Structures are given as structure tokens and as C-alpha cells.
Image (cartoon, rainbow, N blue to C red; front, side, top):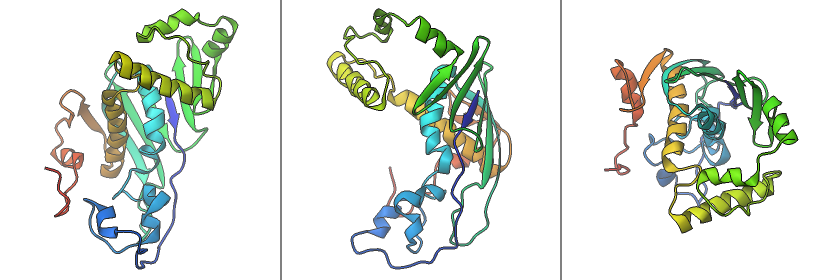
Length: 248
């Protein structure tokens, strides 16, 4: 399986300045190390600083890897990432170029990279399926177009309400998300995207970043949620909490 997230932003050095009066900069920084305000550390561009985010690996990755793992139906046990990094004072510090390879417990292999068409390519014995936010294509999809699944097949999710609109456009997809949410409130069933699956998806994103930043292959125990035989890597599973912002 191939997943493309896109390039990270490059920039700097940026000039420190006084924060705007409407912003409590100390509170905004939370547990991260206290530094002088730089406009590019805030708002949209916080994504390109490892202190606050994980760049495209956790940005687009939270979306794409969620779908990828939905299809894989397993957890990663080995991560082998490579990246180059900038060396610009007061500049974005996330990877310039990156690639992360994952091996799953069921034998599936996934590559996450920064070049190519943004999205997920499933490669299987019956053909390929490409998926991103606005597209789903490939031989299996074409076969469904010729012979669509009957509506009663949607009962597989455990809901009797089959009045959801076809997922043909973004608006219909939003209606389906909200419909699933309200169905779950009524029936007390788990939603299609539940807390556990989303935790696992973002964990996979972080594992790729940790492997990149340490510059080596890592083995992962998805049950204990610990790296195997790597004490240094395990220290990266939590951040040092700045005094006054501790979570007990």
C-alpha cells in the first residue's frame, strides 16, 4: 500500500516579535518549551514545528492513515523511516523530505511518502483502489458501478435506518457522517470512526515521525504500546511537561 501526504513547508529564519494583545502566548504554548513569540509559530503554520505538531505525517496522515488502516485491519509492528531535516535558526524544523515504511502484524506493507498524488493506493490480488478526499477509483470500484451493492448490504454496520443518501459528493458525505453520529446516539453503538480506531491511526503517524527523528528502524508492540528493546525510543512516547502545564 502506498500513501502520499505531500511536502512539508520550508521557511525561516523568522523574526521574534511581541504577541498580539488578544493572544495569551504563554497559555498557547501549553506544555511546550517557553520561547519568544514568532508569528509563524502560531495559527495555520504551527504545523511546521515539531514542538506543536507532526507536519504532514500527523496533518494529512491523520486522515489518510485512518482509511489505510481501516482497510489493513491490523496494527504496525515495524517502522523504518528516513528523512532530511533543515538547520535554520528560528525556522520550520520538520522534515524536508521523508518516507516511512510500515510492516503490519498481518504481513501488509505500507509506504508513506511526500511525493506523488495525494491519497492512498491499495494494491491487492484483485486490482488497485485509489482513494483520497474527493476520489475513489480502480477496477473494484468500476465493478461496483456496473453491479452496485443492494441497499440492505449496509445493514452490516448494525443500523436499520437505510435512508442515508448515496456518498456521491462532499455534502452527501457530511450528511452520512452526521447520520452515523445520530444513529449511534440513539442505538448506543460505536460510530464507524470510534475513539480506539482514531487513537491507533494517529499513533501510527507519530511512530513514523519518531523513526524519522531517531534515524533508525523501530519495532513496536501494539498491545503494550511500547517500542521493543529501545529505551531511548520509549522516552519519545511522552513530552516533558512544562511547569504549570502538567497533566496529572
